[in-house]
Image (cartoon, rainbow, N blue to C red; front, top):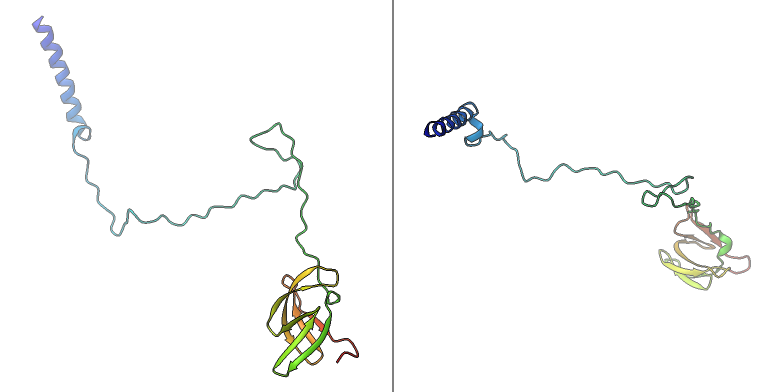
Length: 159
């Protein structure tokens, strides 16, 4: 029996030594790596550009991935253009003040040049306006969201 145990032990030892001898990286210390000069390991990664998701809810055949058997109807496109405001919505009632400090009375609201105020139109709608310039017989105003300024004139006989 002693003979068989020593043969088995010797075989195991020779296998272990052959593995260790042929594969130095298996039991040896890790190999040293050479660092790349000027490489920073804790630096922030380059800025990633993440594309935005685009959802077309006006298309037909919309399918919900979480509820595939549900029926979805397309959403109608909303109009984003606000109704245009015309000069007929405002009434220039009076102009006053000295030549260097003019005041304009527009729809019962007194404004100086560069002043911003909320004015009630003839239809009862409240609109924010900016007084751009006051002349001898007219006023130039701007309505936010409108492309062009609006010129208001005094009525004939009101001067």
